[in-house]
Amino acid sequence: MRFSFRRLAALVRKEGAQILRDPSTFLIAFVLPMILLFLFGYAVSLDTSRTRIAVVLQDSSAPALRLAQAYQRSTYFDVTMARSVAAVRDGMVDGRLRAIIVIPQDFGDGVKRGRTPPVQIITDGSQPNTANFAAAYGEGVRAQWAAAEGLESGADAEPPVSVSARYWYNPELMSRYFLVPGSIANVMTMIGTLLTALVVAREWERGTMEAMMATPISMAEFIASKVIPYFFLAQASMALCAAIGVWIFGVPFRGSVFTLFAISSAFLMPALGLGLFISAATKNQFVASQIALLSAFLPTFLLSGFIYEIGSMPWPIQALTYIVPARYLIPALESVFLAGDQWGLILPNIGIMLGFGALFFLLSFRVTRRSLD
Image 1: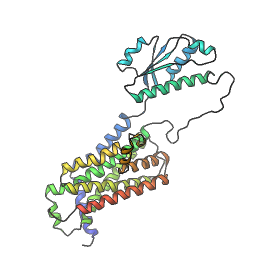
Image 2: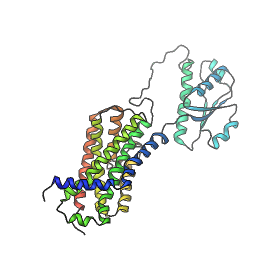
Image 3: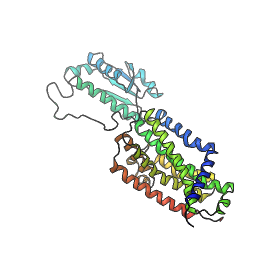
């Protein structure tokens, strides 16, 4: 049967009218993505700032007071001053404090002799990430103070090597700068796979599939008519999320709009193909939605590098991430937002995503039959 663009246009209009009549589609396509974006932009943050600590000042010398003031001036700490560890121990136990920094009694005497006595840093190990942060930044404040006082390298000696740390693309290490682009991947997965997973199953449940089989449409026309409206719907939602990320959350956008749409188009191929395959194989909306969540949304959230670094995962899980299409989307999105059009990184990821898309669409053609069996 010859492919007819006229029949395809009629089918696309029919699918578009069905989308317009279903308010839940717009809820999932536009309202829910904005909720997710605002959650990741405001509520979810991997930045540890204003950590509540106590500085126990056991020495009243001028150097000890200056070090205590350095901790108080730090933007990373919310400092409570005390004279003994016993006075703040309960705050550590009940979670009001995350660390205790003890400036010992002989601190001033040590400074007079030209050395920096160590300070004691006690952290709450029930939250390892916060504990590591408090210990590292606590030591960092002490080291900066000691360098300003001329104590780290001795009175006369110049350090043989000077290290100046600089972070490219995200100098302030703001987690929002990669959480917002990563949330766009979750939005496109939700629209591309979850909504598409319902379209063929809905036709079977409503009994309209039999009527469509009686028409002279081909399977290519049928599948294309199910994909095209959701492709543009997902692109519109992605554009809305990108605009919110740049204009409201202040995420830099250093690439081009063309590259952004090219990356999202490549990812929508496996997302739409997987959703269509699930829908055609299950023929049940509830089952299709559950499978879509388990096979697409959760892997995108957990195994794509969005929240958890892939390099820190056990090697069997790392191997599993290679079959998650979002693994190749998120680095490309982060690149176009933070670094620009880095085609050396973007093109291989686009190629892999298109390969996944071809596989899923082939499977969709295999399971979509002009038969009631």
